Amino acid sequence: MQRSTQRVLTSHAGSLPRPPEILDLVEGRDQRDVRSRPEADAVIQQAVNAAVQRQVEVGIDVPSDGEMGRVGFSAYVTERLTGFDGPRRPMEQVERSWYPEVFANAPAPGFPSCNGPISWRGPEFIQRDIAAFRAALLDAQVPEAFMPAVSPGQIWLNFRNEHYASDEEYVFAAAEALANEYRAIVDAGFILQLDDPGLAMGWNQADFASRTLDEYRTLVAQHIDAINYALRGIPADRVRLHVCWGNAEWPHTRDVPLAEIIQNLYEVKADGLYVEGANPRHEHEWRVFVDHRLPAGKVLLAGVIDTVTNLVEHPDLVAERIARFASVVGRENFIAATDCGFGTTARSQPRVHPTVAWLKLGSLVDGARRATRALFGSV
Image 1 (tube, rainbow, N blue to C red):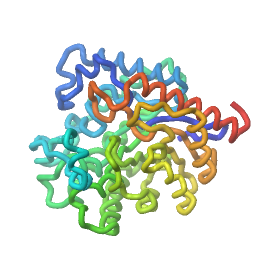
Image 2: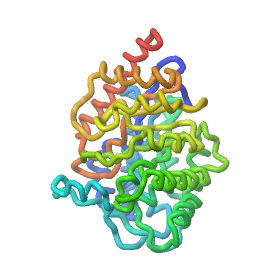
Image 3: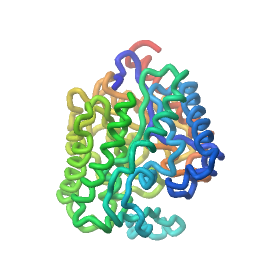
């Protein structure tokens, strides 16, 4: 995994704005239906090519495939894993009960429930993604690229368990199956990004409405054990963990403070830790790394660009945010990024307009260059 040894490096959380032809393929579909059209592979390849080229043109150091062929950052697993053919169940959040008027016109997202044993369907699906990404990178000349994959704990968060006897059995079954995808991504030469908003978002779930933080940390520790089980045999320097509190504009007053779970997060066998740092609920949490020092050998990626509003951050503000993190973790141990993805779920009316999303990524790169001048004395 690269480090910012000569300048501030940039990356993002994975999903990028999808073009109309991709939305026509994936929006509102089960992942298993996406490739039903004969032209689907060619359309997805073209979109991945364009996404990689655009990232290179903007100046992103560690790009992704943009998740072009995926219906959502977690919902894609219905194609990869068996066991998810149960009724669609909505996510039940504490904040929805606290502020029903805020959510009146925002129905809770629903996912199919787990109604059978989870198993790996086979390598052809991830290998298809890998092949498309490799083809797009042929002329990109970037030293490193990453591919996201959903975590066992995010399966627990999004897909209600109606089959396994316990949550522990459920997440470890998911870990056993997902380990195949993780190894395929790393064996292909990519950095594996584990997407696990559930490590933070679980505190906002209705099941924890009247429970204690100690009880919640027990759940987080269990989910981290499942992650580490799935990562067995994979070098930690090929893995980064992305944690967030939900890529949406809601009050976020129920968000668990980063300080309450940071020591748990350090236990993940991943050299990269990726957290939010730009939105108004979590921007102050760069200070967490003063009291909870980043362990030796780890790299911190943090959001210095918000991903839910159409305001484009000024590069000077981006540079200031970078400087804060660098002051506590060391400039070489920090990579500037976005809070989350710009298209975590494929929708034709995204929260951030595609034009603005690319402007934000441009400001990210510009801000990193300005921070580089201040921190390294060079461009």
